[in-house]
Every structure is written in structure tokens, then in C-alpha cells.
Length: 88
Image (cartoon, rainbow, N blue to C red):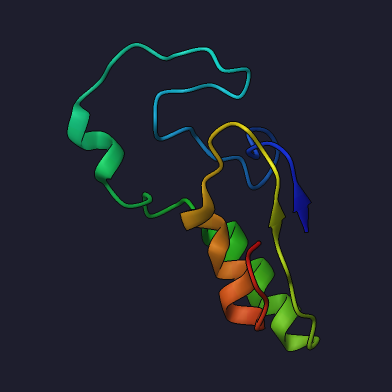
């Protein structure tokens, strides 16, 4: 998996946690502790199902994240972790 930007549309869409939009624009400031919270209960379920399906078919997912902006690695890391892959 090669990724150059955070998934913000589609089935696995993620919301920025650091207050930055994909183009680099800043969101209005919120609670400073909100960025430290873990993913919500609905976030990551798409990636968990994809990881389970890939592991069932013995597919390993290596992730190459090449971006200058924020990427939500915490939510997507389950792909590499559950399939025996790596994150680069």
C-alpha cells in the first residue's frame, strides 16, 4: 500500500486529529486534549475488516507512507500488524 495523503473520502475516510486539513489549512482550535484521544469506536473498523480478509487469503500488507502532511497511522496500522506486514 502506497499512500501520499490521508484517506478523507470513501468507505475508510478518516478525520484529521491534529487540526490540519489535507491541503494544509488549519481547523479552528478545539480542546487541546482532543488530539490525544484514541480513535473513536467506528474508526478503524473498515481497516480491521480489510486486515482480517487479507489475512484469511494469506496476503501481507506492507505500507509505504510518503507524505508531508498528517497521516493517521494509528488507525491504519492494523492492516500491517494483522497481516504480518511492515510500515515504512
